[in-house]
Length: 318
Image (cartoon, rainbow, N blue to C red; front, side, top):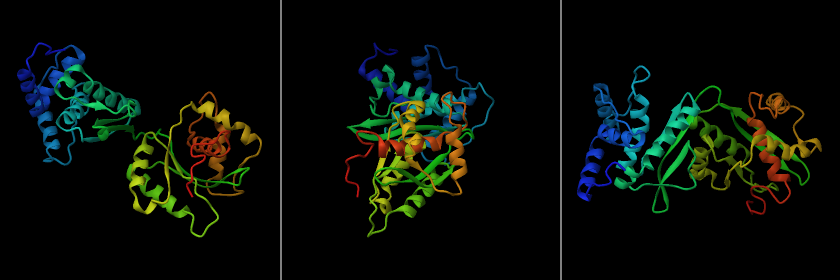
């Protein structure tokens, strides 16, 4: 603890100095985390001034370009996020990177700073216990979600997002429609809302809607929140899905249903060849290129056919 012997008045002064200046905050928290000084150069002062102007709303768009090794990420991403949460627990960040691993690391490091004893001594901030993943976490204020961080990758190697419509006749599961693409958050919301509106059961109808199942991870988390706020979709239950086991285990769990012929697909559809190709290419060695359509297939078969019920078994969602 850097200031274990400091009086309350001295801690109050440290807190005010840190809140007033991002660079002061960075120097103190870097030493607390790394046990070595943060070596300040003139470019850090320029960057910190610009970032604080962003926080105050004076700068709407800021681009910082400099060679690697200049502590740009340390200041602009990691410590800036932690500093903003010191100023207000209601800040929200979407951290994008070409590398999902790097985005998760930066997010986890910012959270690590917040959990430091030195940070907590100045700004008691609680991380919600149900959002402690490296790439997604939230600040808890009086039992409610305040601000938070969501870190992800925009790299080309990311899996596709898949929208699929499934039916069940009591025996077999039917894949009725599918839409697949690489959409960033705003476009994904538009496409998903359109897909749901297109397939909403019309009254009167003998069809019963079990629910809209979305994986509560990566882009799915934001999509769940956005769709739940959409007044036009109030009649469609949005159900978060937590895939608790590994992918190979989930495929093995539903493989008997597929071999028994209880998975049915159309004779022809624009997406059918790609879908069947992905299922055929899936390998336990994880040598396949994509498995996003495999994921939704496992979800559907588990939901409708697994003994003991699926995700929403027993819920009256008609």
